[in-house]
Image 1 (cartoon, helix red, strand yellow):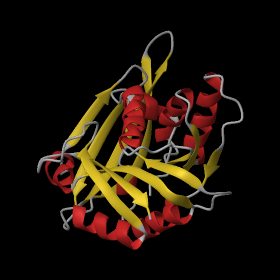
Image 2 (cartoon, rainbow, N blue to C red; image 1 turned 60 degrees about the vertical axis):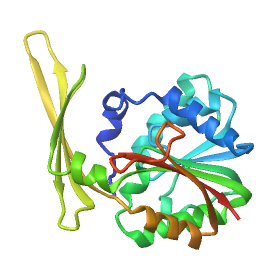
Image 3 (tube, helix red, strand yellow; image 1 turned 180 degrees about the horizontal axis):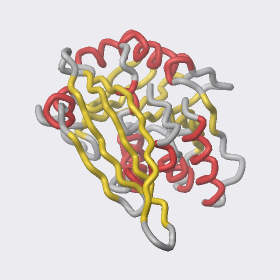
Image 4 (tube, one colour; image 1 turned 180 degrees about the vertical axis):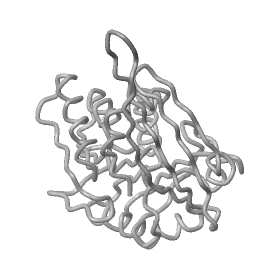
Length: 252
């Protein structure tokens, strides 16, 4: 799994196209759709905490977990910058979370599940989430689809040129046609009086897409009832070319 040791510094800048306020409102609407009070909420794989902080500001009782210390450092700083003191962030892996109490809602967004490339570890993650949930709790998570891995990520290269960093994102689709090897090269701008210099960092990781059938089977084994699946940020059924699907499951 990705350590995000360097990516943490540039993550927010490179995901500036993500409308976190809209995402937070969408999650709340999903919860309301099923008459659910979000209650104590876990943001699983919270990253730099942008969505966590946004939901907190909207009144959700939420805390975050991530495996990356660097990401959590950014998240803690962000909470403080937004005037939120004492917000809880824990460093744990998704498949081995160990919470201090039960939760009423768990969210896991921005294809974090795809970063788990062993289906047994995905099952462990679902089972751990279920174990710490109160009855009737909701598990809301999104995944990149097999279509996106095969047709969008595939063997393609993407370039991001922002104010502080130039990033080259290179993909290699593996033989299983579901797993993508991803290499990131960051060129951080270092300004001086005479010229612009760059410092290079690199990260590499994998993402794997799982079929709808596999996800539904794992949810069932973990003690969840699937309520719905939608194309992300909509209430419409996913089309064959849908790139991101959100699942809503209830703890039995």
